[in-house]
Length: 253
Image (cartoon, rainbow, N blue to C red; front, side, top):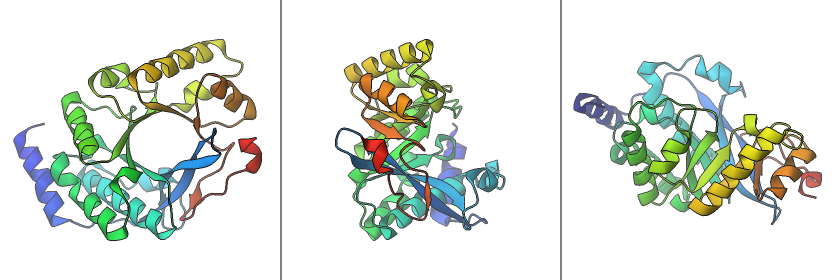
C-alpha cells in the first residue's frame, strides 16, 4: 500500500468522521467444552433494531469501510463492558480498512481503557475469506496487535485466500475452522480427514482450534474426538442481541 494511502488513513484516524449509519452488536459464546465455561463472546454486527448483518453491510462501501471497521470495534468493546462480559471478547476486523496498525488501533485502546476491558481479553479476528493483496501488511497488523497484548485469530479457516500461507508467516493464538468443514463431519470422511490434519498441525504450531457453526451433537462429538475443545454454534447458543446468550445445558453433556 502506498504512503499516500497510509497518510490518508492516519488523517481519518485523527478526524474521527462519523460513519453515517447506526449499528449495534449481538454476542455469541465460544464454549470450552472440557471446563463447561464460556471462553469468549464473539461480537456480531447488527442494526440498532437487531437487523441482521446482511442488512447492515448494504450500507458499507469503500469510502466508509474504514469508519465502519472502527465503529464496530468501539461498539463491541462498549457493549461487552455494558453487559458484563468477563470472558474474552472476539472482534472481527477488516485488514483492508487498516492503514497503519499503530494509529488505527488507538481508538480501540482508548475504548478498552475507558470501559475497563483488559487488552488480553480482546481477540481480533481476521477472516480468511478477505482478499488482502499485501500479505506483509496483514502480517504486520497481526504482529503489532499481538505485541500490544491483544490475542489474534484467523476466522473461517479453510474457506478463503490466506490459509496455510498466512499460517506460514504468522501463527495466531486461535484458528477458527470454517463451518463448511464442520458440517456433517461425523459422517463425511473427507471433512473428517481434513479437520484431523488441521487440528494436528495446530497442535504442533501452537494455536488453539475453534469449531464454529456446530449444529448437532454428532458434529460436536466427532470434533471432540479429534481433539477440539472450543466450540461455537447454534447447538450451544444462538447470538443474543445486546446481551450475553444463555447456553443450552444439554449441549455441555
